[in-house]
Length: 147
Image 1: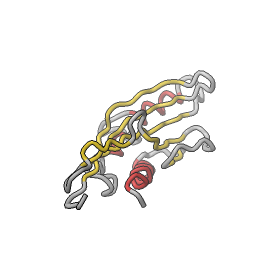
Image 2: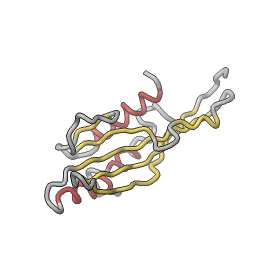
Image 3: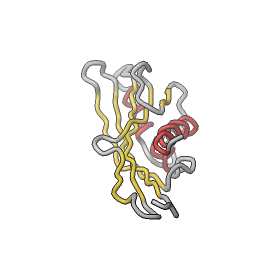
Image 4: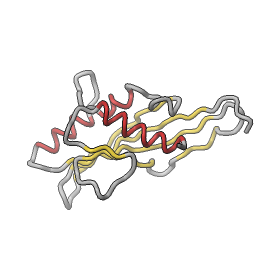
């Protein structure tokens, strides 16, 4: 499996294992066939892989990825409450995506570290589903390579 595939797969598995909500599905890639109440791993907006430091025996690269959260509207407060749980951070947040990522920033050993940058939250004007984006950066390091 490529490192990029491992990032997508490991993020989905890590979230599935740590986000304590039963009515959410987890996907390593965008999945249009999955209904709302889902979390997907998307490539970063703009730059996906920054190759700036990949040269030499101890090069680095960064992979930008986004975690897309879509929650069905339900009633006026149900969807919003669920988004707050998922986008929250801190020791009392049992469903925090951010806490699930920082619990193992190496993503199962696939990367050197992962940084959660920020999040956005909006409501789709057509479906009224809540949509959140969590922007992340994974740092890859090669050591002792001949290229």
